[in-house]
Length: 88
Image 1 (tube, one colour):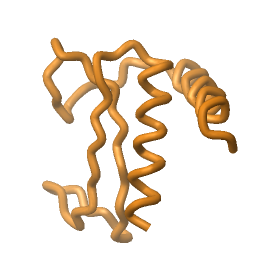
Image 2 (cartoon, helix red, strand yellow):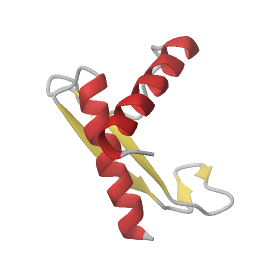
Image 3 (tube, helix red, strand yellow):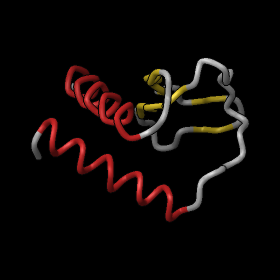
């Protein structure tokens, strides 16, 4: 199961780098049951695929900058690029 998660995350990272202007793509896995005051309930694992810029330091306290429509458009573009590169 772990191999499948990382394979898909790497594929998605490749697609993100084609759709979003970024210097690199960071993969970050969270599987903690407690993160600060946020409890992951029920327990689960999730993978972040983060487009990054060398000039922008990582922080988890950023305000949302994109509209829902923009995010939906990006999701559609990513789906198209994924299908082109890896099939369904």
